[in-house]
Length: 107
Image 1 (cartoon, rainbow, N blue to C red):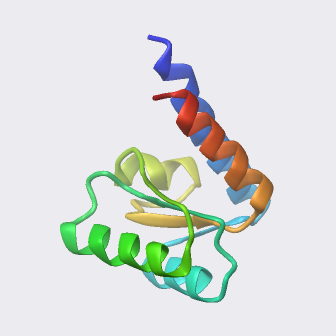
Image 2 (image 1 turned 60 degrees about the vertical axis):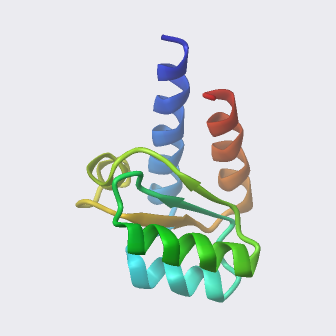
């Protein structure tokens, strides 16, 4: 039961980051953020297709951007006020660090 609050914090942090315009979502926007050096963290939905998972994890490895698998498409999208999202990028270092800390705490 201890993991649940940390998961809620991750989604809350994503919502705050989105409201302050520090999140880009969707395939094209995420790819652009990574390639332009604007992404500090990429989150891929656990239920994303194998092709999507491979594409973004390889891209993040190449550009040295942290990448995590978290939640499902519907919940990721909902947390940032959008429809389903397979991937998103956090474009603020502070938010990215905080989200990663909460992800590590929930393990």
